[in-house]
Each structure stands twice: as structure tokens, then as C-alpha cells.
Length: 324
Image (tube, rainbow, N blue to C red; front, side):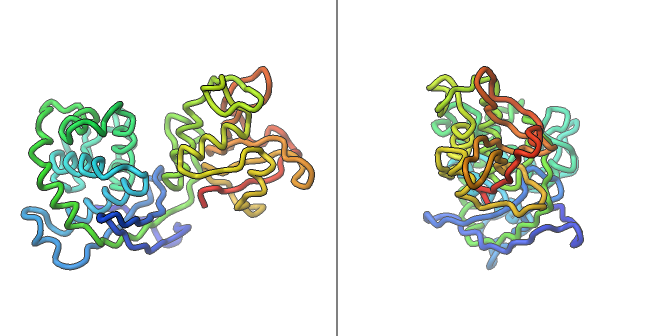
């Protein structure tokens, strides 16, 4: 099943058609780090007749898997890897049991760091975790579907995924045109690079990139490891470039590029927090990651690190939300 939250807890409900295949792009906004948020995908037409052995609930789970992959900019090969994996591990059923503590569509294990049981039982979260691990596999796009799946799952039956490739393609075709409702609650974030929470895949990618640069030195005008390190706006620009979003180069121009987070509105992970005078010079920017913390390249003689976002006191100028 797909977990849902009560109406009083909802911050946003979006109803967006999911268009899959034939080069048509669809968009989904969802909280990929929250166990109380999900995609609820509804199939159109009599899709159950198209794939023998897979009913509407299973195909709805397949539609969620594909929707998450598309929104994370994972190529279609990755969708097929994910589908074949879930077909082998759970027959596309969101199982509340499994070998030892394995749960959900991909039989992910809380004890192995995949998330809490509630998170893993959320298909949106589970699919996001699967894709994150897949994207971390070097050369996965050149692997067979079976080998890519095995690189993530490390199954004791390493050749089991190959037999699902043909049916995975049929399932992908069957969920074309599914409609997904994205239900989100406010994400406060953890402030922990090892347990990132984010309101959408773009901010997830930006935070993940920034976290990976910790320890690199501050370099004035630095745009990345190839230059030995970052300055503050070089880090935020590179982080959002990793998410497919182009930002201006300096902290001042990034601040004025917006969109602004209204004063008094809670910050979300992925927001950019700025310091200085908006009218004369914004002199510093960091990437908020929740828990009152940001990751930034502070100053000469320091390194990219996590620290409280309000440590600069009255110099705080406000925040923007590039992935709004």
C-alpha cells in the first residue's frame, strides 16, 4: 500500500499527469525524504489485461517507481532496472515482511541503512533510495539490467533479475499515461549528510552534491575540485548545477535571482541562505540542509563544512528557493 497523511497535516497536494515514454516529459513534486509523503498513482484504461499476472495495485506501484525515476532524471534503462528488481523482490507488491527485516517493494532492510520501516514501506521513498544507490554504481548504464540490479541489491541469487527484463518492458508500456497525486507534508530536514531529507529530487541532488564536497578548502573564485576548492557561491552554483538548475555566479546575484522565501516562512532543505546587505552587497551564501544547519564554504583558511545557519547573527539577509 501507499502511506498517506491526514488532511490537517498536508502542506500541499498536487494533481499532475504522469506522461511516460515516447520522449514525453512529466513532472512530479514529492517529498523524497519523508516517510509521510507519497505518490498515489492511478492507472487509466484496462491496464491489468496488458501484463499477465500483474493487477492494478502492482501496476500502480510500477507507475510510482517510474515517476520517481523520471523526476530524478534517471534514464529509461534505470527505470527498467528498478522495475525488474521490484518484480523479483516483491512481485511489485509493497510487502510488510521478508527475509530477516526486509520490507517493501525492493525488500530493503532498515538494519542495513535503507531507512526506517515506515520510510521503506513508502513506495516513493523506497524507489528514491533504490535510484540513489543505482546512480552511485560506476558504469551502471553500460551494465545489463540484471547486473545493474545485482550491483544494488547484492542478492544471493545474482542472476535472478534477468528473467524479468521482457516483462519489465511490458509493465513500463502499461503504466504509460498513469496519473499521480503527490501528497507532501512539510520537510524540516535532518541537517545530516548521511540521512538527507529533501522536498524534491532537485534539492536532494543539490544537497547530496554539496555534502560530497566537505573538507575541500575555501578558494576565492573557486568553482570546484578541479580548481582546488570553492568559494561560497561557487559551491551553491555547482550544487544546483548537479541538480540541473543554473544559478548566477555571485552570492549577490544569486540572492536577487530568487525566488525569495517570504520572511517568517520556515526554511526547507535546499533553500539558499544569504548574509549581507541586499541593497549594496550580499557577501555570503550557504545551502540549508535542515536542523538549523547549512553547508557552506565559509572563508579563507577554512573548508567546506556544516555549521549553524544563523551563526552570523543580524547579518542574515534572507533565503531563496531555487527549486521552487
